[in-house]
Image (tube, rainbow, N blue to C red; front, side, top):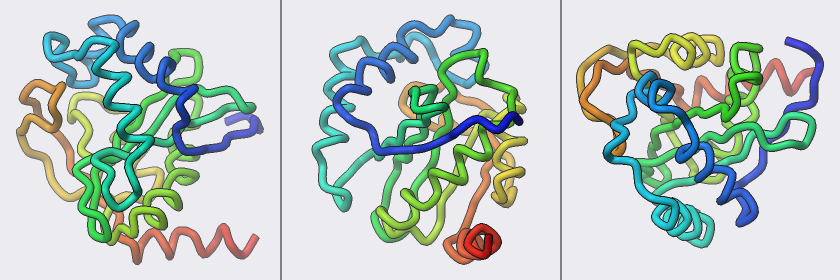
Amino acid sequence: MSQRRLSVREIQNSDIALVADYWLQADTAYLEAMGVEVSKMPARPEWETMLTEQIRAPLAEKKSYCLIWLLEDQPVGHSNVNKIIFGEEAYMHLHLWHADVRKLGYGAAFINLSLPYFFRNLQLQTLYCEPYALNPAPNKTLEKAGFSFVKSYTTTPGWINFEQPVNLWKLSAGKYKELQKPQEQV
């Protein structure tokens, strides 16, 4: 991975169109490779309403919490959590928006930059990720970022997904703190 500057911030109103564009302009093959049931894809107004509500909701009441991933201060992706039980657990999703920034090794670095927001702001004890088992990129990235493999099973993981085999990964607050110690010592 080149030495390009990566950063993360919470979603802002100015990001809503970018996130909606990611979903609405992606080709069908890409969406299906992520496990998305294209017929369940909401229209732009629904995306905008959901994201606006997410931004406005207090942390303890959020149904979803989204971070924007930046490369050289330019938005290139996002990570969000849903199925949030504040103070307990949430499920993370990972999205690099453009093919030219995928497969460059940024995924694990973006996850590591995102973890403090998820654990601190939502007071999580456990963070899960449940990627499509047939999509190797997020599975490799989660392992590289320090998540532990729990199990494989078949489910419909989200409201825009089809039933699919998934791999469940987890990171406990304790393991997250262990992973942060070497970074703190630098």
